[in-house]
Image (tube, rainbow, N blue to C red):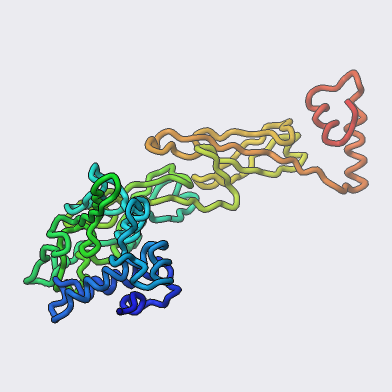
Length: 374
């Protein structure tokens, strides 16, 4: 008797995945609809018999120990009442059951199928995310093969009805049990549930009916997007099989950081450092905003860590670019670490003019800045 491992061309320690790949390759090679050479059909049956025997761990163990005699005269057929083992074997043989229909078989997907959605991650500069822009991107996606127009068959030919399942896309297997006859329905392994076999595949797409191409797209990035914003571009995903509609493209935004400005929602944050004299006397300083440099008034008597507000200088609200957030500026006061003797004399003279009974808000600030008790 022929060795089942030799029939499949695998070593005796081959795992389940290796067995499945070897079987599928040989089954397609010797399928009667594809291979018209004498003996191809017998070879096809022999391959199926060998895989049935080795696909189930328990059946394989009996075969390894006793050879084909250990299978009870029927390779791959379980003992009476071994319904669980039979179901496991069938699931392995036909690559699982997926969605079950009332008869226990895989839900058929023989008609047009919706194409897959695609994801594209796009890095956007800080200011471009605030005011929006248009970007050109290139995406790899599946499009219908122009040569075969999606049929997968060489021009002038067409798919043929699968002889294994008779075009139904399903195969049935029955066995007797103590409880009666048991019928299992599963996707046909020869046509993968399509009911058709392409004997002469299209050279351009390899029989798939679709090809991967790189396509240029111009993406409109609206004002106010932020990291995590998801933009949907309808119909730019992978094309569907058998003439099905394409999926969508989802563009995920990631906004780059800015060295001077920070953002939280629609609010912009920044810091500015002023001298103690600017804080006491007040001043006008230039600061950076998303709209460019603007003048910011520092009121006299500004306390350290005061927040000043620039209204409508923040981020436009997504979907409503007219409404903008604010820009908040945190004021840091720089105190000198060293002063000259002349500066010390002047400051001490100023400080001595204020007594405990005559301290107003400005002197309170002055005393706070220079460590005088008020």
